Each structure stands twice: as structure tokens, then as C-alpha cells.
View 1 (cartoon, rainbow, N blue to C red):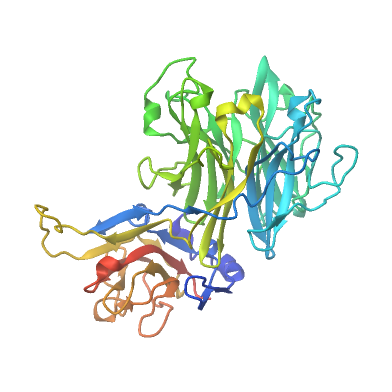
View 2 (view 1 turned 90 degrees about the vertical axis):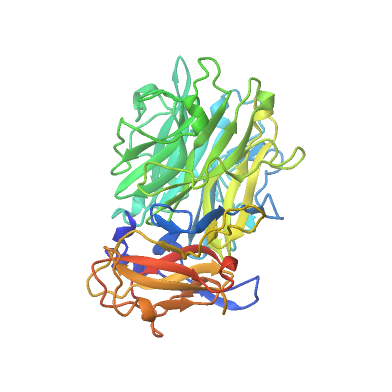
Length: 536
């Protein structure tokens, strides 16, 4: 789905855009905030949706680690996650509850079936911050079923990575939840591959194929994808009617890159999977081939891309692998990528880290891993992540937990006025307008879309002038020139009003939005996003 489809999905939007009241912590004032995942969002850093810019600079923001980290920790000795809470998992908000799936690693070293020590587990929360591990009573462990393990059939299966997708469009209630998992199969050595499951409730899962596991692994005859090593489930998402499983491998076709790259496989129905894949993302350094036997060296992309599907754009977190000759020198940070076509991802800011690993002695030391957990809660955006220190992984140290990286709500990056000619010897620009124009957006005949701005630094001397243009960038009467909307109020979702009305009616079939940064203090403005919704 592209940004041009937002009006075509009016029925879905009307049914799902729920206005919810939150307290804005920074101001102490109440502000009504809608669910941005159900509208078209034009982010400041998205140069596909906002391709035309004058005298504005894009600045990405850095999140802060939540002081309560880790918010989900390992269990006591003898529990399924005593050795590790690995957030190669997912978070879904449903019916005012946050649901979390993760990989649990036990401490039973007497178990020689290595893969069977990795299981899928579940936690939940009322606020996204404080989590509990409910006693599900589904899977036997250590002689009883008093644990938070989810049931997957067939069993046992060794899970390294799990991603969960809620799919309300599936007409079969038994397939409402879908899970992609990274499991192993044997072909001379142990290789990774994809194993999908479906569920009615997210707790009891089943394979839609007749499968018998062997030593908690898939048998070669049951492998769905090509018989190569692929570590799936970095991300699971649906885009334009297709399901995509994102993961990593170092397969050289169709062109060579060094080391781990992000690749996606796809399926129209979550049952039949294509044998072809797409290269989703590589880092520039991976164009330099270091040669065979050097797989851990060099800058690489770790474990695919976990995504936040915002309808017209995918926001993604990927692993930034810093390689070395010895494991003791390998480390991993997290990077930020985006996609407008569901397949190919790019960095809004070249080689910029989104989140750095912790220092030695901290819970997230050595390396970070991406989970598929993104939530707007009140005036904050929570990005959930996990930890894995790659430096001593072979020694089986305690690992993991779930942490939160925090940003102001939807403010991943901003457009700000370029300050030129301020220093001695700097080039003095003539007076120019600081402005941008969006790509053309389809409008359904007879609709009255509404517009909202996410920005700060606005006031009487710093405003955003917003005009509507047709697809040839000609002013739309009643919504441009002297009739332009002027926004002077900062906020996460400030309504854009033309003559006191938030809805824009009588528009042409395709429109562009023209935004100018106005006033003596326009350098104070930080524009983060523009939201477009159909009339309610």
C-alpha cells in the first residue's frame, strides 16, 4: 500500500481510528491523540513522501534508554527463561493490553538436545512498561505446566527468533494470528530456516502442515524455503496483500556482498512461500568483499529488519554489526531504516546509529538486538529492544532482557530551517523561503480529508503556513494564498484549519501539500510529521 491509497481505505479508517485521551506528561495538559498507524503519515525524514525541499535540513533524533530497563528480565533458576530472555520477539497492543512474545532459554545444561532449550514464551502488560509472565498452563517444563510458554504443535521445536502478526483480514478465525519462527534443520551441518504457525488466540499455535520434528528441529524434507542457511524472523509484516519474512543470510546471489545482509521472502497466503527472495538492505561497507573464511569480520547488517507498519511507510530497526577477527572484539548497535515499497529499505541518515550498545557492566553491554515492538503511549514513542553480547556467546553467559528506547511521540526526525551565513566567512544566502512540497496524494471523490501537524517551537513569531496544491502544484482555491492555514500551536497532532474547518472538501483527485516555515523565529520550528485522515 502506498500513500496514494489512504482515501481508498476509508471504511477501514473510520472503523479503526479511535480518539483516545492521554495526559501529556511534559505539559500536564490533556491532549486527544489518535492512533497514527491508521492514517497516512508523512514523516520529516521520508524523502519519498516529501521529495521537494528548500532551505530545510533534516535532523534525526536519538532516543533515550528508559530508566526502568530492562523491563522484562530473566526468570529464577530452573525456569524456562533462567538463562536468557531473548527479545527476538514481538509486541502487539490489543484491547488495551500489550502482548509480548519472546524466546526463552533455560539453564538445564544436562539437556544434550541443544535446540530444545530454546522455546517461545509470552508476557503481557497494562501500560507497556510493567510486564508479567502469566501462568498459561500449556506446556510441560520441569515436570509441570506452571509457566508462560506458548504451545506450538508439532513440538518440541527450538526457536531462535519469533515474530507475531495480527491479521484481522484473514476470514478464518483460526488463522487470526501468524507467527514466523527461525528453526533449524540438518544438512551436513545445522542450518536455519523458516517455520510458520497460525493461531486463534496467540497462545496455542499449529502448523498447517503434517510435520514431525527430530531433536527439536525441522527435517530437511519439510523445509519450505530453499535449502540454504537463512535466519528468518527479523521481521514479519504484511504489505500490499503479501506477507514478508525478513531475515539475514550471506548468500551472494544475485550480486556479491560481504557478510550478513537483510533479505526478505514472501507469501500470498502464509502457506505457500516463494523460492525467490529480495535483497532488502545492505550497508555501504558490504560492497568491499573480504573473502572466504572472514564471515565475522567487517561492517554488516545483523538479523534482518524489524518493522513498524505505518500503512504508507515501514519504519525499521536493523542490527549494525561491527565485525572483527576474534569474537571478543565483535559488537552490535542498532540502526534505523525505512521503506516505501515494502521490499527495499534505506537509511534516512547515512550510517547513523539509532541506539548504541551499553557499556561493560550494563545489562545491554556488547550488543543489541531488534525486536518488533513499537508503541505510541501518551506523548512518547516506545521502541523495544533486546540484548545479546556476541563477545562470549560460545561460553553461554546469561543473556538478554527487554529494554525500551524512548522518543517524543513520532519524533524520529525533524525538518528545521537551515541556518546559513551565521559564522565569520560563511556564505551569505539571499533571503529564501524555507518550505517543502509533498508528493501527489490521491483523494477520493466527495471526501473531506483532515490534516494534522506534529511539530514544536511554534508560536506567534514561528508558524507553519499550509496550502493545498493540485498534482501540477497549482494552488487549490480556498486552501492557498490568502486562504492558507496558519498553525501556531505546537503539539503531536495539531489540527490544520482552513477558515475554522479541519476538513478539506471539494478537492481535486490528487493533491500536494505545501508547507512554509514562517515568522521571525522560524528557526525555532521542528517539524516531525504530517498526518492525513479521511473525514470521520
